Length: 294
Ligand SMILES: [Fe+2]
Image (tube, rainbow, N blue to C red; front, top):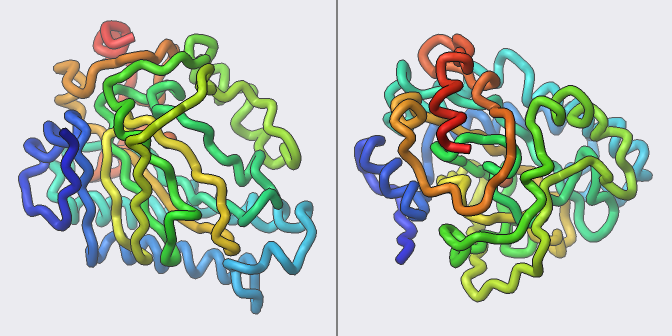
């Protein structure tokens, strides 16, 4: 059984335990999440000027869209202001700021229809984040910048939380991805031939759910859930941001959902920053724990 909790007040240790068993936590009205939305909105407004950003795709060619969206995504992900806002975002959830680390957030820009589904607007096929080298202990936060509907959010395949799926993650190495492929996104305008770890079987899921909220509403879930970008049939571009946290005690103790099917190598741990002071995580110290989990 999986439970969706709305605005549940609970200690972070207990919530992670619950998340690691597949539960979802939905939160509304958090100031840190709203501040990141505002920051994203400002950058989006700079990017599209007077155009309505949700409909700007219909006013320009794909090449121009990519030229504008590439720097937007990069500024949101790498800007110092974003990192500071992530600290507040995490603290609102009651995490221990000295034991919790976050991965810099990503801004997703998913145009409607088949305008662009590769590169900077890659539509993720069904995956677990672990197939991309993330640790089992990962907690994911997904937040719309503008209100969303079922036709432009993520599909969550809840019945696959602990059921294996044939997939290509044993060909995926995180270090190789960073070195060779991550920065090639902007060149991918029609097909995305980067070696994404893909499902190798049809996902036939009666347990698919889509959770759609307003701007700044947070969906929190274990990244062990199989999930995908739903094809955007909403008629407008979807803007959302997502970030991830880990608690280092979980990593050290090997807590988290069972690895049911990921064969990825390498680890993203070295990308994580401490909530309290933005110090990078020293991934070398966790090499044994990571090796034990893979
Ligand atoms: Fe994901």
